Image 1 (cartoon, rainbow, N blue to C red):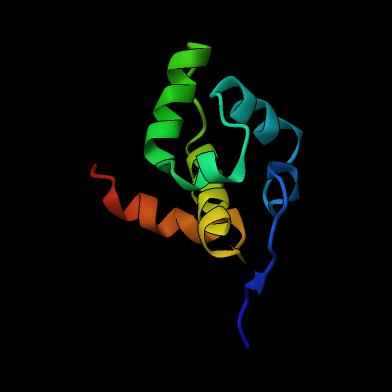
Image 2: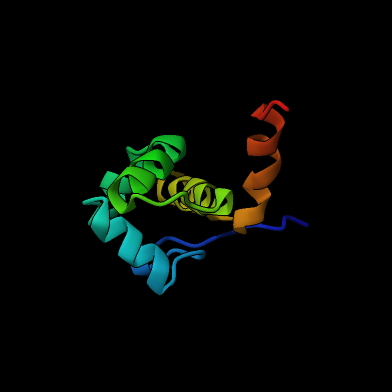
Length: 93
């Protein structure tokens, strides 16, 4: 049985991992549509958010971006922590 469900979203607010904070981040980054999100890269969004806020962002915010981009592209709604191993696997000590 698959852990993910297809959840076609009509707006950013419909995405599985999106709440008030993520909507605020998207607005700050100038992302208003699913199409704009689908064309984005989670690492670039994370860095852009850090630049825009002047604050280091939790790495899990990047995972939320990855999850929402994945859902915007595919319709597959996965929890944000599904994307953590991919990120941490790229990090070096």
